[in-house]
Length: 115
Length: 109
Image (cartoon, rainbow over all chains, first blue to last red; front, top):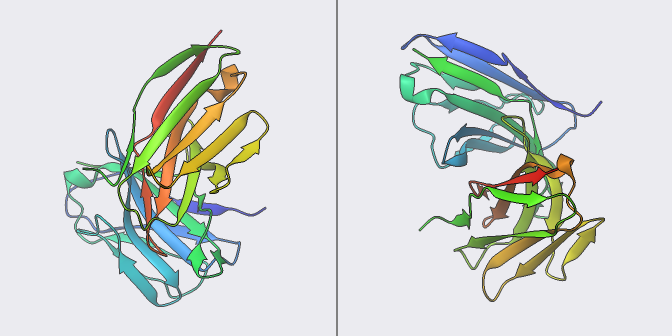
């Protein structure tokens, strides 16, 4: 089954404790992306990756890191989480169509609470 | 001004009604447009792409107006199962997706 998986689905942690949220897709998509969703603000892009070893900042990259060492995986790293990073996080992937990315497929989401 | 703007609603409509949503975008260089559906705190799922010529998928019709910089979604014969949040998505550079904050629809029995 074609899918994007994220782990963990739910996480409660404390300020400053490093964490990683994993994201994996089995569709051989070139493009992958991380979003956070907050009430009233909608989905905001954190980082994206156009291919292996190619990443770039989205709209809200502060406090996050990513890596793309393999095509299928795109982990999101919070080196020192803070309460303002409490949010619902989505990973997404997309194939390329010609010169542009296309429809995104989303993972089920990770609900993160930072105390 | 936000890059992509949607009326947050909620739109409360009876079953069988026709309802329309608009989404405006600010960047005239925007290239691709989509409507996604999101059920409560679940992942967004593609509803339909939006083409310049307009497109229809069953009860759903999407239109793009480049001159006025908006896209629209029309839902005919609303069903209870259409209750969700509808997200407008715009790609204005090759790699950057901009999401609207969504319009909530509630279809009432």
